[in-house]
Length: 261
Image 1 (cartoon, rainbow, N blue to C red):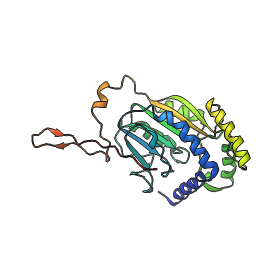
Image 2: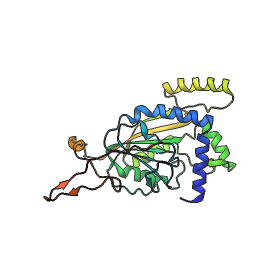
Image 3: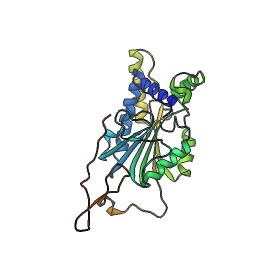
Image 4: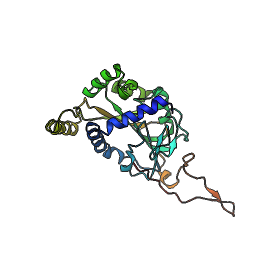
């Protein structure tokens, strides 16, 4: 990972560690909880510039892989988002936390996420909404070359919808998180949090963050009913079956790994 991206990643983590960022992150986790519950299988993957922000702990899938561009925190797979060292059709759910927001090759990154997903696998893309109050503030700071926003390339909901269609993913729904940024003192914080909670219950547009929930569609292919009986191999992360003395393969007992936040 180049030095500039490493600095941007640290600045973004610092921003999330502040009061407004922590409030936004907490609201994101609550909004994400029911979406994580819909996916079942063997492997789930998180990508993005925030390796210390692990969202996979709420997933019912046991084997959770946290990928990043440097070995930090709970990162178990060091790679670039536009070249994932994983087999095609091997991951049941991909969670992309600001992956497209700070990626120089967003189209290729999206294609890689689609490639590694199983047929009918779930893709959750979390991004900053450029058409929000926070997005306008970020744009102004980016023009002034301040903080991580100088490298922010937010993808609008309309553009992301088109991209998903092009790579063969069917958009299920857009979910919105916190239309009002958490600015001001404690009294204003309480007022803003009530408005945000009311707006999120109704999924009103204009959220500071959006969650795009998409499904990988493969023509003329249905999810096999017996798929849960035979675990797939995730390249480099799950060992191959060892051969027994009788010539028949002996499958190792699969153990899920839970990456700590």
